[in-house]
Length: 297
Image 1 (spheres, rainbow, N blue to C red):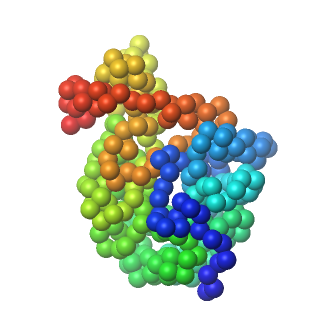
Image 2: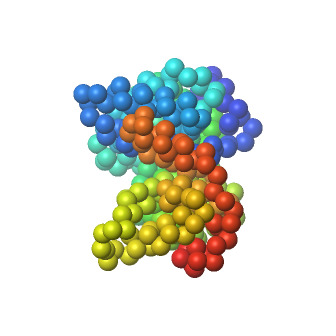
């Protein structure tokens, strides 16, 4: 395959780097067809205007609609100013194909839907049942695409930190995208992040604004451990003038392996509100609070 003529953006030309926050593409793909394209463009424009320069999507997000919508919106902005990632291994209908040919075909189809070059391409939910094919075919295909400079960086995305940990251990990835499992309410993926730090792999955290974080109505009785923990964390945060969503967005980046946090949004108002939270600094004293440390232990 001939390497593309596209010159890598300043974000990736010397060394692959990730902006601190990015916009995740799953909600964009789920917007209904009627007004979805217009709402998606308005949302992506608002993210860009708020300073977000990393955008992540996948073929299976909305059956290809997410990629198409990102491509349409981002085509109006200078390509060298932002970083774009998508995924391979899962088709628009969610079916799996981790063969070498399938990986190359998937990326080619994504680039066609996007109408843009891709900086980072990631294996999408490879799963243990596909492990042998991932190691023997999918990863080598990604490695070749990186060597050919078709993409600047390669990685894997999953909701299972143990699977990502195996990939970080056994391959040479640039990045992993972890859906959940490292947030204020769930830090089970800490061993993965520690391995990423040791091997120089950049971690991307998503799913940090959970329903427990966004909905902490203390007037309602509950036995849900997640809700109870969220309320206790909120009480500590409030002493420092910090909202729980604000702390949740800031928390993952405190681990040195976490290079970026993805924010999911499906409206201009939603991404503007999230971007405003990102711009608000969290007092260092909060992270040293003894009660907070006990709750996070």
